Image 1 (cartoon, rainbow, N blue to C red):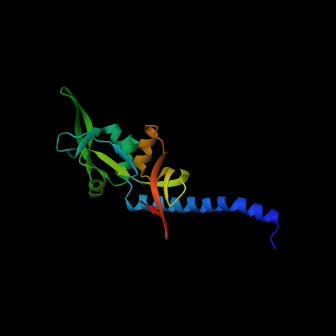
Image 2: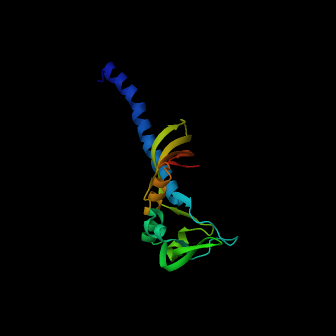
Image 3: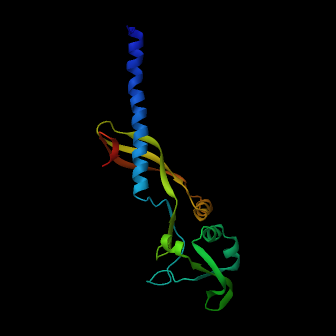
Length: 181
């Protein structure tokens, strides 16, 4: 027979244990949704369109920029861009300086939009901040970037961008656990 003291302790602890299970299941549901939606991860507008048709490839960049800029070097090493040789960079209508031509690769065409925005990596929910009780729950969660390519890490560092943030969603409790509404 259970003592009254044990019953009181059990009654006090069970709701907290259930909440921990809910939070773990909620994180799984949120991460499954983020993964299924192909969450864009980190995006940056890195290239200015030359015209209404978008960025014209190849682009010409300063020689030092092509070899020392961690974002461009990262994009080359990640296979999004390739160095196709010497070029001339026109700074204004009177000044020309030596440059390097960078062209987009097949992989780059999949990740760099026509207007010059590039995305990489993913977002992963890491912590439930708060949620409402019930079979339908508004959930606020903390996320962080995951699997970032080298160019994205360099861009975040250069611009002192945050690597975490908050998101929210509505989850519904089903007989198979939590899922997005």
